[in-house]
Amino acid sequence: MPEFDLKGRTAFVTGASSGLGRHFAKVLAGAGAAVAISARRVDKLQEVRAEIEQHGGRCTAVALDVTDEARIAPALDEAEAALGPIDILVNNAGMNVPGPSLDLAVADFDRIIATDLRAPFLLAREMGRRMIARKQRGRIVNIASIGSFRVLPGMTAYCIAKAGVAMMTQCLAREWVRYDITVNAICPGYIETELNDTWFNSEKGKEQIKSFTRRRLQQPEDLDGLLLLLASDASRAITGSVLTADDAQSL
Ligand code: NDP
Image (cartoon, rainbow, N blue to C red; front, side, top):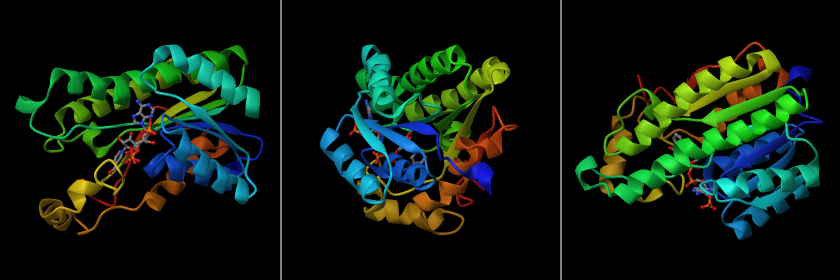
């Protein structure tokens, strides 16, 4: 289906040095998009870039700490200088400090909100400004979580941030629908990445996996269809949608 083809598109993916972001960058490149990958660990980004280029893709790596608002516009400038105007943003960078709320340091609460909520807003806003100024169709895909709409034990600040991302998705979608910019969110279930691998390799983590509806962790590939839908022309009438793809974990 040509509508899913991303040839001629340019994507910017945050948090592409590991886990889901790394996977998303490769999926977008595989569908034909030029991909700017960003994160703090530039050595890891260079590995991803090499992999994408080996498969014939176009890629550039940009150092960006998403909590540093002064770096956001220059990072997008760098990406656009290398690959051309960005028309797909994947707001994926995220982190968590697990534990009970009573023990959560204020600095950790602030870091979670800054990374998981404030940063995606600032990135979306800067991208929105550029897309509107260029009268360009745009796709913004926010990586939320099943924690956007249900309690994940020991992850209160993270759930607060992800609930905010879900609402932000709807608010920005409404503001920008007239500019042909769609804003949607994907809510994955638990997938083993650097974010949680210590936990899921612990005895308690393994017990938690047995409590999931399908008794297993989700795989990154489970998100590919939704990512390509939301990044491509095929989703032109889908905006403000917060879509769950969680291997039935939240049922
Ligand atoms: P990882 O820890 O593997 O990846 C997180 C990515 O975010 C890394 O590339 C990291 O790069 C980047 N990152 C973290 N902080 C910053 C920062 N301040 N500035 C720039 N980049 C940053 O975790 P996942 O792949 O699992 O997480 C990706 C997204 O998916 C997150 O938003 C997460 O909340 C969401 N998610 C994950 C689920 C899961 O079960 N894994 C389930 C639901 C949602 P670097 O350290 O190099 O900067």
